[in-house]
Every structure is written in C-alpha cells, then in structure tokens.
Length: 224
Ligand SMILES: C[S@@+](CC[C@H](N)C(=O)[O-])C[C@H]1O[C@@H](n2cnc3c(N)ncnc32)[C@H](O)[C@@H]1O
Image (cartoon, rainbow, N blue to C red; front, top):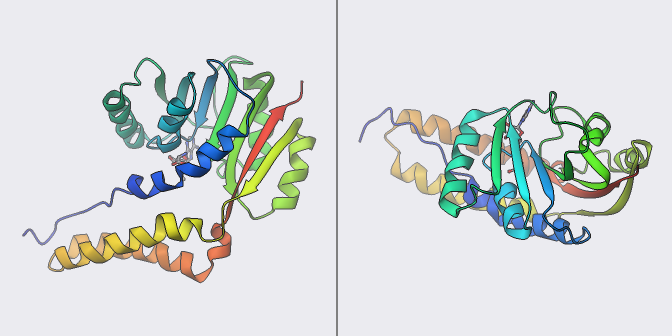
C-alpha cells in the first residue's frame, strides 16, 4: 500500500440521512405546481436532488465551489434530472437573476457567510410576490432570528428544530464509525491518517458542545 495515500470520506451518505427534515420542511409549504426553485449554497446537492423528488419544479443550484457542483452534476445525470436541475457557479453575495425569478428559495447550511438578516433582505427581491423562503440554520440566536423574519418582510409560516441528537445519530456517529474502519485500513499511510485526524477533530468539537450544532428550519412567506 502506498504510504502517502490521501483519502476523503464521502460524507454525502451521512448527510442524506438528514433529508427527512428537508422533506418535513417542504411539506409545511402550501402545494406548489411547477415551482421555480433556487437552492443557494447547494454544495453537492443533497437537498437539491431531494427537492427535485419532492416537487415537479425546475431547480437552479448555486455554489461557489466548483468541485461540489461537479459532483452534483454527475448525480443529476445519474438520476435523470438534467431537464429539471441546472447548476451555476456563483457567489451568494452576487446573485444576478432578475427580480421575482423564483417561487421558492431554499438555503440549507449556507446562510452563514452572509448572515441571517442580510440573506433575508438581499434575496427577497428574487422571490415572486408571496413566494417562499426556507432556511436551515443554526439555532443560536433563535429569538432574534424569529424577530428578523417579520422585520425583513416575511411571514413565518412555521419553524422547527431538529431533535437534539439528530446530527449525532444521523451524521457524526456514522462518520466516526467510518473513520475507525479507515484507521485500520490505512494504519500505515501517514497522509490518510492526517486527513482522518482532521475529520475526527470535527467530531470532537461536536462532542464538546453538541448544543451548538442544533439547527432550525424556518419556513417563510414573502410579504409583498
Ligand atoms: C454546509 S454546506 C451546505 C451544502 C448543502 N446546502 C447541504 O445542505 O448539504 C455550505 C455550502 O455553502 C457554500 N458556500 C460558502 N460560501 C459561499 C458563497 N460565498 N457563495 C456561494 N456558496 C457558498 C459552500 O461551498 C458549501 O457548499
């Protein structure tokens, strides 16, 4: 075995286990026929693909990271969604679609670079009158975020927290199990062990303060 072998754990298999909450959030919206959906910070497209399955709409996924979009593009082909999902490399600070281009904007784990309030304000123009915005964000600052919803011109239709143990049970625990398996396989490959150490450090951070990882879905309607 090469001793400098580099590995990257495919985390999508764990991230997919949280899709049950994406489905729950989507079902809290009124029925939408052929919605135009923008998935901001779509990454490798775990929610994007799920949205294509949940709706009969057309989806544009945007992200700054081309390698994630490449991975998503492969999945789009494999799943036969190329007529319904397109991707676009762009920054969420510079979204250039015309006003009211979308019936629904979806943002999972990607409002942090711009901040909750600024995201709500800047993306509002992209939503058609009385369209919808769904944001999945950390629970920290919840009461202030709930206030911002109306201050930024939205009605809060619903919100819910993921269960306290969701990120552990569905994501970090299976990730830790995989790290342990890989440790045995790559015990003589220093580069691989270095990468695994980084993954394990993230898990330790989680274990130290699991409350910080609790997250919330906000289901909002734009007020025109
Ligand atoms: C935590 S991941 C979430 C990915 C996906 N939404 C999901 O739930 O699996 C955050 C994503 O935001 C993207 N991102 C970070 N900063 C960005 C920016 N300035 N513009 C666009 N995307 C950005 C990252 O590349 C990453 O794919």
